[in-house]
Image (cartoon, rainbow, N blue to C red):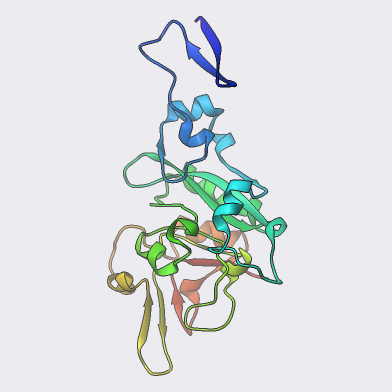
Length: 244
């Protein structure tokens, strides 16, 4: 096959001279790592293969800028060098590959990449994997969208105590269908997200439900995380945090 490289605006563009009516797959979503986009197997192959799509790296400048005043706030406990940007692909029930990203603590970065890769290989469904900054770091909003994420400098719900998410040591998966449930001092029931109320009843089957028989549960707990679904004072079915 003949091919040519042309310089356009200082950038090199590879194009096929033979199959001009069948151009190479568009890898823009991967080249720019546009989380939320769907990608094809052909595009991934051109990009460099599946292995290249799973990595934990220092926080890129553009990601760091997006985090300011949202998931990241000036604090004495954690800084940029303590965090890593995780790139991953994931499947949903649509049987398509999606581009995903998370920010996590360097302590769990390699483990998280390994878990996400195994979930991908098993075609475990994760609907969305966007940085919470897309939702202005509003946890209720991102949970209603069933987003999966890790780092966000915030408190535990209904407390003044920092969450392990504030250190990037906790991961939430398929959040709408695996809600946080706690009975408050006044007897009222706190459910987050509020739209997750139907999924507080864990006795029936529904998509994305995490249980003890779930592959996601198996991978996280074997990697040294505990599951919020096992807590007794509250339930956090979406939540896996590092045991320290």
